[in-house]
Image 1 (cartoon, rainbow, N blue to C red):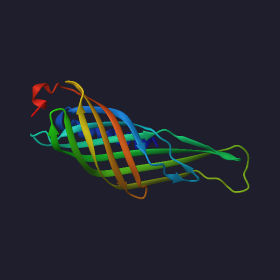
Image 2: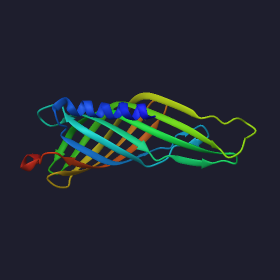
Image 3: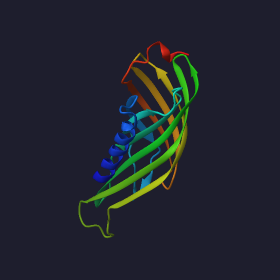
Image 4: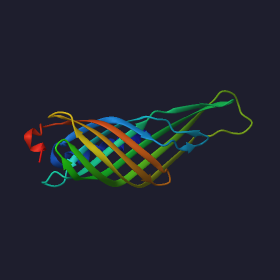
Length: 189
């Protein structure tokens, strides 16, 4: 699990350093459809961190790496407690296809890495053996979202996407986004 988190953090850092400094940083919550795994479901919400790297001069195309770590869900059984952890890593391309004053509508597509870990804590020895399990999946995602300007340095984002992989999920993300440099009057077209 540590290796996966370190790998995703390095991925975000590497893409952020492509332009010496990322344009903005978003922190928020991720809500996903629960996935059944090893007799339990994954928990909600997840904490998400993402950054935007500008790819064009018109400020419409961005490379957006993100990582979500979901709240572990405990399921109490008679003989054991199963705790399920879920981790999502995304590398998306965002395209701003509509912009009206303080609202932007975006389309997004990208790749997704999902990792589920299930740990069992025995309360007493069950008649059937209980094991820890782990599964990861790589897939794609497709979605859309809204970016709403809240101030010269702050935005509010809402996105929804569907993840196509072994671990299928519909994911909604809500973010507060901080810009490292003020957009000034150039934000309005």
